[in-house]
Amino acid sequence: MDERARTRVSRDCLVVGGGPAGMVLGLLLARAGLAVAILEKHADFLRDFRGDTVHPSTLQILDEIGLLERFNLLKQHRVQELKIAFGDRLQPFIEFRGLAPFDYVALVPQWDFLDLIADAGRKYPGFDLRVSTEAVGLVEEGGRICGVRARQGDEEFELRANVVVACDGRHSRMREAAGFTPIDYGAPMDVLWFRMPRRAGDPEDVFGRAAFGHMLVLLNRDDYWQAAYVVAKGQAATLRTQPIETFRSGIARLAPFLADRTRSIESWDTVKLLEVKVDRLPTWHRPGLLLIGDAAHAMSPVGGVGINLAVQDAVAAANALAPALRRGVPDESVLAAVERRRMLPTRLTQAVQRQIQKRVISRALESSGAQLELPAFVRWLLGFAAVRRIPARFMGYGVRREHVRIGEATPA
Image 1 (tube, rainbow, N blue to C red):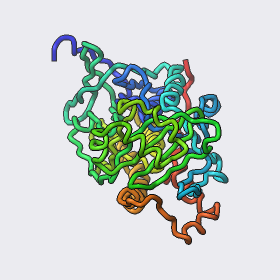
Image 2: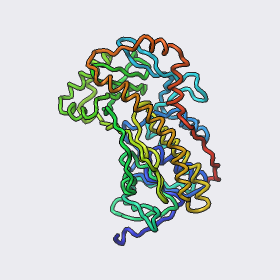
Image 3: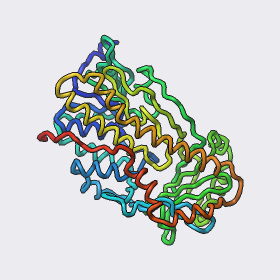
Image 4: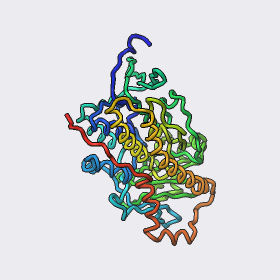
């Protein structure tokens, strides 16, 4: 390491990655009076087609730390019901109405959510958000992770801390540096994300339609549709070799009311690919290092629960780490306790997602029929709101819901 790389700054905790898990963890630890640095390799949070669904479990966390009122000022669309189109009929599948204390999912741009968390963190002296700063490796001494090697522009330096928490996503560089390999459970599909104009008279609902071997999910964002075109795994590359008109025609077949505006998809450059992964680390920690969020478990987009599982991980980590960090260097048993607490919700959620992928999505993508039919018995069951609320509660609040159990230190 050359002379430029010798700068060392100590913190109670280093958080690698400024996504939902990293930002919420950084805020909670700083709020508890600890010194925490969050390293975000990008200059800002402005990246499109990230997870934009804020579920009731996350709304409850925002309420517990006094941010719900400010969150409610963000531009958002509240969803109380999810539907699937069969022919000309929209069948309600999931209903959040009647759930307490929150009976909706908020669709809000992720960058607005992250900016809200960052603004809240800045009032605490221990909150140190470092943008355009990339963690490129781990620092290890005596068999324990004690920091990271980081780069900001041409400058290289080390940051030291009592614990490092990696929240750097499904392609985690810290996970690779630590020698961890996730178990890959596979996924039958990938998703192409794009926008379509929304007009007066369009459906109000968030809904999906499956036909012709593809699926289309439309999220109502008030002035536009955030659209997800679901294709069989590996098919996206082949599709992209075809003229954009072929893709436009596929959209028009699945959603005829959009046929007169498909030219808004100007080229393949406006269509973003999400390579769907479902994986999980068998172990999330080693001495001095903890992995949470997508770095520990990549979730399927089914149910839009990824951001909310990550936030729950962050709350569980903060609850365990804050008292341990006040005493000094956390014992590995503290990190293991976080893994134990969050492993069950992760396993159960992924198990449900994998069954939906196998029994619903795979069959829909393999079908060449113009329409899929819902069995009469299932239609009858879904006529009861109580039945539709069962998956809503599982999606919205999850298993082993977390609550903020650490107090707030006096802000500067």
